[in-house]
Image (cartoon, rainbow, N blue to C red; front, side):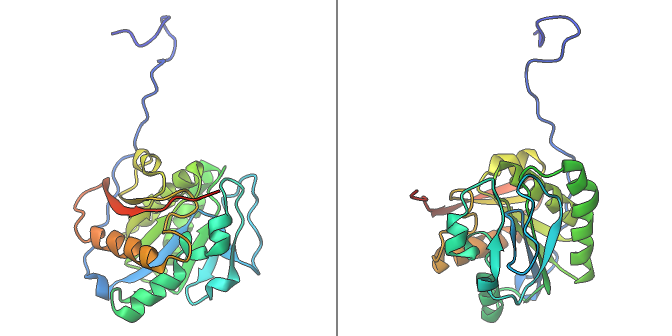
Length: 241
């Protein structure tokens, strides 16, 4: 079979290359785990410098005890309206605190992280931001990091950061609205519900759905045994524009 129309030319068939596996096993029960949350969806404190919407590889540290009312989104790559209604749709900080009170997870890392993955510099995320975020979480003795992405390039950037965190021994899972992108970029673990980008963690102000997506994603981590596993979650939300 010829893959080219002229000798010496590049293949006309696009063959994506998935990065090599990176895997950190989860060795503790969830009720003993310290959990962090990271998002490429442009979430930051209202008092922090907004992200550059043309492309940005910087990140913002967000204390995990921050009231959700003090958070906002700076992102030009997707419809932010659901986040503006309820930041927990992308960054479920309230739901995670509730899971700690319930005893479902042990504690929260003192530091969560927001970045704007749209149009970001891949090399910078891979060589600078990802490793820097990973070291922050490692210093805080984090056991699990959960991630979300916003637009398509956000899912790419989020997966790059996810792999960096996994590489320092922290088990991760990305809650993806665009799971094929996370899969192709080499995400160690993926969970996905039938939701639009901007609402990866569930319908805004739907506490039941957001809680279920988090719990099912975390429970899936205890059963996943190898790189690249994905679970489709039985939740659906359609954004009516």
